[in-house]
Length: 236
Length: 306
Image (cartoon, each protein chain N blue to C red):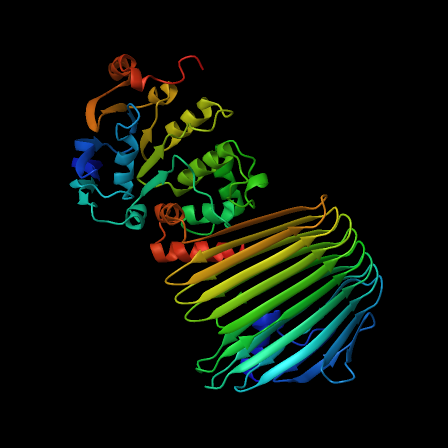
């Protein structure tokens, strides 16, 4: 189980504290799917970056299976089974898709198993495995490879920051079926209705605070009423 | 050859044993072993300053090894090698110099290589430079590569210098006639207080001539690198130069890419980027379980070798 205890995060702006997150308390049960949603600037991405260790909270603690991991580095958390798919995938000069996929697996893997992860995200593996992971790939291709890396990584907690962004040509059914097949605890930042619908629980953030937690049916009304946090994908 | 010489030879040329084709091995300022083949003749210059490598016309898929090794301190070696590539020939030339200097006296090798590519010939030229040995003496390598390319000829040059060389000035000069194509990939890594200077001067003289230069450099510690390129387009031609540098520690990289279009039909492009390793690249690899140090190593390895 992943647990966040009194997580707060602020930055200094013009000599004043600007709170991004305030006293967030959340528990994520093993194997369940959680979707974090809310208006722009509500602190969603900051929250998942704190779980991965990319951002250190100003106060509060992060526990994984009862162990306080707040002071652990990104690498240490990764080795304990936390993985993270970036909202904007990172590109590299000189590293190939296969290099990153091998690192994600934690060992050198045979071609067929690497290819299976790429096939899961709708990419013809043979066309991609030896390509450089650079900006010659389209945004959609990079996003799918980013998700494939998270699948290859596996682990206890899989974080996806806006996984639907940039994959317009790929059906949402594929994306949601991938999440449903994953056995890890899934924490997905999303505005998309179809992604929210697969959640066991939705966490609605607003101005850095947890506004509500519940099922799609219980929370969607509140999201609909919030003009800034309107659900995407209604007519898609 | 002793074990140090054998290891050095293997590092710069990939040779585990004496090759079967044409080769010339130079060791500590002298020709150690030389062999011509039926297609490729290697002759000493009359004034003793170096060798002439003559590749007959229409020779295909052959290679020549011309490694140089220096394992003593206090040696200054200057050599002039000329390559005459016959019409329609297609060959690979593997050069390179390794200095193993365990003394406090500087050793230096200045290799001046001049290529004459006849019509429609093709050359792949691989050049690797290494400096090693615990001695405080300098390990200096100053390669000069002059390339004259006739109509329709093609040359692909890969030049690599990975650490250990205390000082280097690397000059490459090329002239391309009609439909000639030149691709150069340079990879340089410096550390400690090493200095590396690179100069590329390329003249695109012929119609449809084309040159692409990619330089990737990593400068660590207090090392300094300087990259200068000058592509002159005098015809309907294309030239592209790309210089990327990664800075670590207090290192410095200076990049001066110049493009000079002297024809309204010339199309010349340069790109240059220098900076630290991008933070998001490190973070991404750390989220995949690598430590910061491991991530840095993977990024540099990929940057230089990918």
